[in-house]
Amino acid sequence: MVQLKSNDQVLKVVSMTRYHFVAGFPTAGARHFAGLLAQNPRFSVSSDSAAEQVFGLLDAGREAPELPLSDLDGDTRAALLRGALDAVHHARPLDAVVIDNNPKWLGHMRRLSTLFPLSRFVVMVRDPARIAAEIAEETGDARSPASLMSKDGLIGAPMGQVQDLLGSAAADRLLLLDYERLLSDPERVLGAVYSFLGERVFAHNFRDLPARTVAPSVKPLARRFSMPSLSGAHHAQTAPQPVWRRSQSSAALMLLSETG
Image 1 (tube, rainbow, N blue to C red):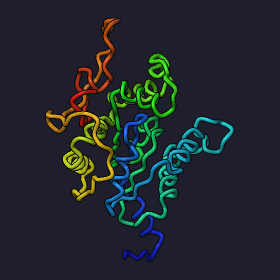
Image 2 (image 1 turned 120 degrees about the vertical axis):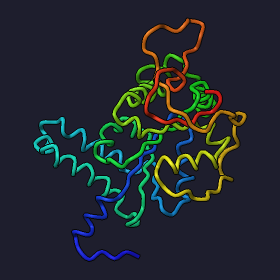
Image 3 (image 1 turned 60 degrees about the vertical axis):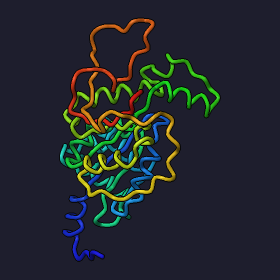
């Protein structure tokens, strides 16, 4: 076990910790994905920890003139935000890689990419029709497509955030992972995830994953993500494809199922 003898050593360990962030659409399997990663003892994995809430409050404080945070210079605010994540995850092993899963990280990923230059972002996606069907099945509330896909809707809101990230400078650190692809080909998908994170592959146990709901994909395991074309209207009778099925290149990487 590593023994620390000075505050300087503590600070060096903190600065070297790698943080990765997982977010996901509703019913898109982010918890199952995080649960798989948690099997690896090198990873310190949390779902819905206090990290996002603390980070969000501190980050919002820079815009509020009545709060002392607004008087801090940029470097001090950045150090405070990094320190907040270190504080929430203070119980981690000193050599751990921290992976924090929370759907609200989607709204912070631009900021996180500058604060944590070694970070990677995994966003779990799924065919919107499947999301809507599962929400209806779980809650008994068959919501209209318009409400789900609205700017503030359960599907529309994260869709807009993903679209924004695809055009950002952090796009090359973004992986979109389709839940159905994870279920149909978990071993190869996890291998690709480890390559994306820059970590040594770990032998996972997949028996607790739900049964897949689509046939295994025959496409190549990974390809570069697609940006949507913002010009031109869809035909009224044709359901619009999700943003990850449209054209124009982005630096993001995706692992998609054959459909959705």
